[in-house]
Length: 637
Image 1 (cartoon, rainbow, N blue to C red):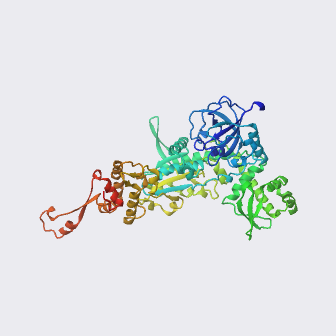
Image 2 (image 1 turned 180 degrees about the vertical axis):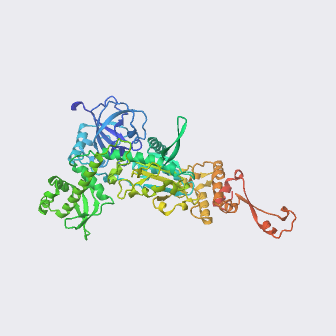
Image 3 (image 1 turned 60 degrees about the vertical axis):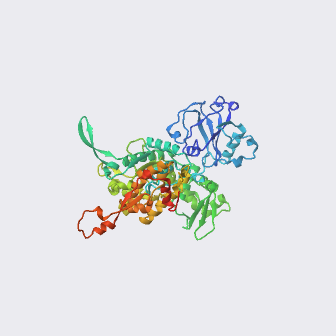
C-alpha cells in the first residue's frame, strides 16, 4: 500500500496518431502506457491524469499506476489500439474513472487556480501533475456521480450500424478492393470512413492484417467453379492412414459464423454482471435509452392509452417528449425518474397520481408515470434475457442450439465484429453458392433479430442461422455486365455502393500531377467522356491506373499493358472505335487497293476495297504530344 504522502501525480498524454485512446477506453482495453520521461520517479500506486491531445483534447480518464516502468509486452486486445506498439518501457495502469464518452473539456479547466501550471498540450508524453489537480478532477466526477452512473454512449460516439451485406461496384481501376480494407476496419473498430481515410495506409494495413491473423477478417475471391460446398459445407475426401474416407467439412462462411456466434455469446454473458434481483439504475437507464432510440420502439402510453412520442434524447439522459396531437415538447428529467424508481420498486405500490406529483413537483405526473411504467417493463424483459444467458455455458464448442434473445444495438456494439470480404462476388453463381441461406442474410432474419430464422443444412443435418456480428463486403466490376445475372431476390438483400472513376483524385494523390507535360486528369476525363458516348456510363477507366505514373515510360507501360487491352475488350477488338477514343496517333487507317487481290471477277470486290483496315501503332514510338492530343486535338509541340 502506497502512503499518500509518498504518492506522485502524473499527466500522461496520448496523441491520436499513436494511440486510439477513446476507442481503447470504450472497449476497456487500456491496461498500460508509455513511459518516456521520469522513469526513475514513476512508481506503483501513483495517480495519473490521462489527456488526449489534438482537436478533441481533454481529460479522458483518471488511473492508478500498477507497476514500475519496465518492458511490457502488449496483449492482443490492447495492441489493436496502439499505432506504434513496438517494444518500449511501460507501466501497468488501472483505469479508475473512464471518461471516454464525457471527457473534461480544456475550457472547463481554463482559469482555475489549480490548473494555472498545467502542462497539458505541450509536446511530450509524461509530465508531473499535482495532487490538487488530480483531486479537483476527482471531485468533479464524484459530484456528478460519474463513476456509478456513466452517461450513455450517444454523447460522443454511437454505434455506426453499417449494412450487413455491402457490395462495392464500379468500373475497373476505381479502388474497390483497395477500399475493402477501410470498410472492414470501419465495421470492426466502429469508426467512420472519413476518420480512417486520414490515417496512414501502412497503419491501416497493419491493423487489417492483425485482424486477419485473429480470424476476424477473411478474404476470398469468387470464381466460376466456386460452389456451396466450398462456402457453406460439403462432403470432402480425407486420407486417414492411407485410406480415403469422406467427411462433412465446414466452408469458410460457416466457420466464420460459428466464431462470430461464439464470440457474441461470450460477450453478452461477460458484459452483464448477471444480477439476480435488480439492476443499478445507471446501467438500466443506459440500456433503456438505447432501446427507445431503436427502431423497435414507437411511443410511450399512459394508463388511459394516450400516446407520448419521443422527440429526442437530451444531454445527461434527459428526454424531450411530446403528447399526442401536440407540437410542443416537454422535458422529462432523469433524476426525477430515478426518484420514482427508488421510491417505488414495484409499480403496484403507486396508489394515486398524487404519489407521482409529490416526487416530480410541478412536472406533468402522467407523463412521468407513462415513462416510468415503460422503464419497469423494459427492466423485466432485460432481467429475463440475462437469466437466459446465465443458464448457458459460453465455453462450450457448440452454440448452434442456443436461441439468442432479442439483441439490441447496444449489445451488438459491445461484441467483436467479423467480416468476410468477397472479391469479384459476381463471378460465381450466387444463388448456387448461398443456397438456402439467401433468406437468412437479411438483418432482421439473423440471430437475435425480430424475425430471426434458421435452416436445416443438407449435409450435416444441423440447424444453422447467421449471427448479427458477421458482415459481408463484396466487390463487383460493372464493365462485364455480370451483375445483370443477379436475380431480384438476391439483389434486394445487398446494399450497393458505387465507386466511380474520380479523375480529381489524380492531382491530390500523385505528385507531380503532370507527367512530361501531360495532364493526367484531363487525359482520363476525355477518355471516359468518349467511352460514355460510344458505350454507356458503366464503361470507364478508373483513376487507379494513373496513380503510380511518374514518367513518360511508365505512362506508355500503363497504356500498353492495361489501358489499351481493356479498351479493346470494351469494343470487342473494334480498333476503329478505339481510334475514336485515342485518336489517329494511336490507330492508323489503311485502305485496300485493287492490286492487293488476285485477278478474279468478284462482283463485291469494291466492298473490300472501300472498307478501311485499322492497325494499332507501336506505343513505344509515341511522344508526349501524342498523349496530349487525346484531350487537346490542336496541340502543337
